[in-house]
Image (cartoon, rainbow, N blue to C red; front, side):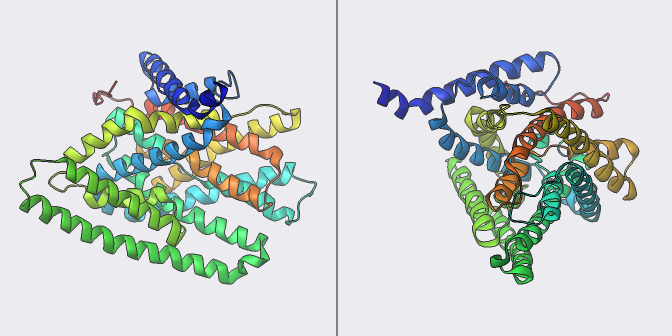
Length: 408
């Protein structure tokens, strides 16, 4: 009996996650907050920080579902991206991302420099401090995307600038991470390793450009020639394409899979069946993938073993994480001619760190770039920025326009 409960415990875990995220999502919606906020609180509530009712045996499967969830979210973002508007904000997105990386990098390095004095690791202490800054440079736009979709603001000028900047931010973060990890691991190839990774990033951009343009042309021709009574074929082939591009991005080029998913979505956007494809993926997303993804962030929080020194460090990290993106990205947007209102919106939209920061932190921990005592503050920072971002987006996008109704 116990073995059966352990073997099939993941079914109960998923049921608890779906029910709790929906109940708390509807509750937060009554307070005029996006449902994603409720889903994140659900993860905190059922995770080790409070009730701890999700068994550890289920986490491996939940992590995989969560990964697919964020891929689908970014694929949906690509499907709803106005590529013409994105082209207009291309240079602006690069400047926004660049300054939005530099400011958090300096802020995180400065904070770690003050607190991280004793070196008990094999890597130089300045690299450890620099790595804390790199973690703060990460931007996870998936929660911003979900919130902007609920508010009906995803296709606005500021919304497209956020999406473009987040993609570039991902690439800049990879470059920074690669440089630091190469310096920390002499066996990784040193500067030669950095050069190879830069070539891989360039290779991915070329690969994505060719493949996505080719698939876009294919979809246009296929949709025009097929009678298409069974529309499900378009959804399946689109998902296969999304997964293949995501796989190639991560495995062959070292670029985050969500970046590949976004490009795949852009390739299918504005094809004859794109609206139908989008509606099908929306169903898949809210039925299973999105709730598990958002809850999984809260499930990672464990507050045991906190000292007063780490508590102060955590509070300061939260402040720096919040202000550095608003100031850095907002300043970049203002330099590119955006209004003050749009600059603030863009800065707020880039606050969330999400799974990107957790992935970076895991890699640093694995190669000795970070003390384990700093892992809990980073998780709290990720959860804090993830929860505060949709709340602040709701505030800064509040205007006379009526938002699109969200699905319940």
